[in-house]
Image (cartoon, rainbow, N blue to C red; front, side, top):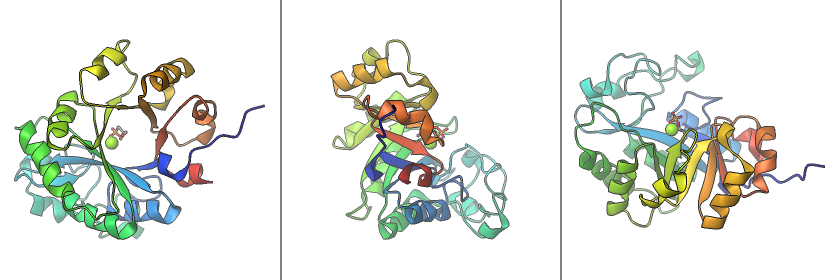
Amino acid sequence: LVPSIGPTGEEIQAHRGASALAPENTIAAFRTAAEQGAKWVELDVALSMDGKLIVIHDDSVDRTSSGSGSLGELTGEQIASFDAGSWFDPRFAGERIPTLAETLVALGELGLSANVEIKQHKHHKSLDQLVEAVQADISHRAPGTKIMISSFDPAALTAMHKLEPDLEMAMLWGRPPEDWAEQLAAIPATTIHMHFKALSIGMLEETTKRGIKVRAWTCNDPVQLVSFWGAGLGGVITDNPKLFLG
Ligand code: G3P
Ligand code: MG
């Protein structure tokens, strides 16, 4: 018999918002996550040409908006002028690519907390500029909005930790390297966010022993994780939080 152990609300993060049901990384996707009962959203941030922190996954606006071009060649104002909803569904026409500052205002109103994934793109000239922009924006968050930071770039976590030593930092890996424990010890991260297909009971036993939290991305099928909750899995990042919230 498989014990029915599932995640609690705090352990579920809506990936790019509820991106199965609304255009990713838009206020509509965050609102949908809140309507589903999620407490956390994961979102991606990067800089525009003029140093505005934008909530978007790719390094160009092509896939997720009516505009075209690289973030490094577009101003924040230009990025804000594009339609970020119609590509997903005409119902979302008029949705915008939000800044992190705008998003945090909305999250405050929606009672949501945020996993801010810092993207490192080729057009970023300065890591300090990137993390200082994150710090400036999150300093204005609503009192009820908790923040954690994640990144595939260990240097981004290290730089962010220097500015915000109290925030939870998660190292992002698809499949963690063989020497994940050594690599993690060298950066100020207490958490691993890894692809759910790379999970193993053995690794969770090891991370639990070491006091390291593990969350799995991007899983849209609760059955895939059933055996891992009891072994210490700490959370899931999903496009469709409702599937996990029951
Ligand atoms: O946070 C997990 C996940 O968002 C990492 O991959 O490419 O969807 O940002 P990606
Ligand atoms: Mg992400």
